[in-house]
Each structure stands twice: as C-alpha cells, then as structure tokens.
Length: 69
Image 1 (cartoon, rainbow, N blue to C red):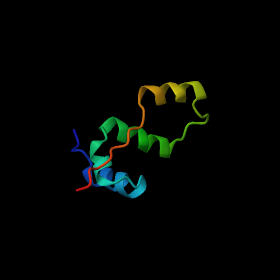
Image 2: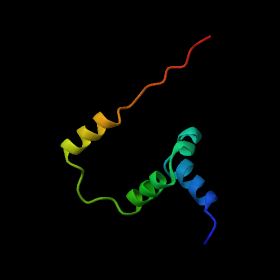
Image 3: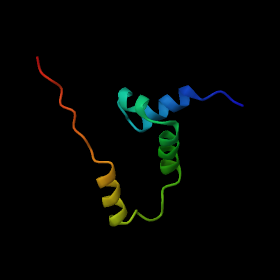
Image 4: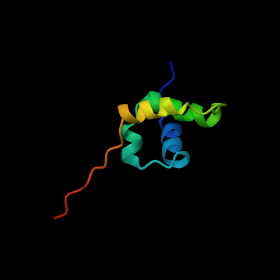
C-alpha cells in the first residue's frame, strides 16, 4: 500500500480548489476525492433542482460570526 500523497492533496486543495487551509483540513478524504473527480471528469448533466433543494435543506450553510472584543 502506498503512503497517502499529502503533497499532491495539499497542493490540489490549496492551489487548484483555492480552499483556505482550515476548510481543506476539515474535508474528509472522500470529499477531496470527489472534488478531484469532478474537475477531472465533470458530470454531463447538472443535478435536478429538486435534488439541490433537498441537499440545501439537509445541509444548510451556516455563518459563524466572530465575537468582536
């Protein structure tokens, strides 16, 4: 079994996806693999609006406001 290609993964996450480091490190390996796959072989059809709406309802964006002191 080969060791995990950290340099390639970090380079892709920060360089190609342009993720902030904290977002990259919060990704699971599966999420990173899917992002790589999407860029290498994009889907031919967009997902249906109903599917997008269901995903948005299940996983809403949250805004974290930092306390100012």
